[in-house]
Length: 143
Image (tube, rainbow, N blue to C red):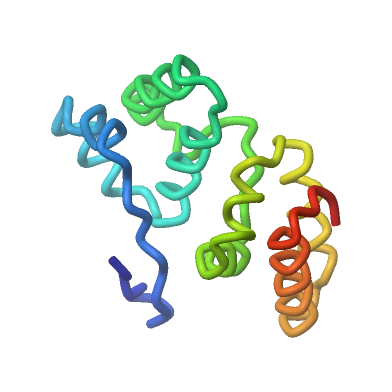
């Protein structure tokens, strides 16, 4: 589902939370309210952080930590590379790039994000994102 930002009028990609995350969020009305107060980008970052876990136990532990994190005032998962929204959208449009992205280590993801963010001009950043998706679609793990 897309959400229109009242301030900018731009569409923001509303992330779809997997069933296990939804179940944890629905444990408390306070947690639901706090989850709903997060920006789509913050919700996306929580979902990506949980889904990036390689082991089932780690994923469960991360998902179960959402209520305590939100109740303690945290608005983002800790120690997690924030993926620029334009890169996130581009990865969603390229299944091969998205699959490679999902298999990258946190360090490899940080390398791609840093490489994309080196471009300060909007047009240049768009080209970096396009190149990053092409590299990822070819299976490259470093820019």
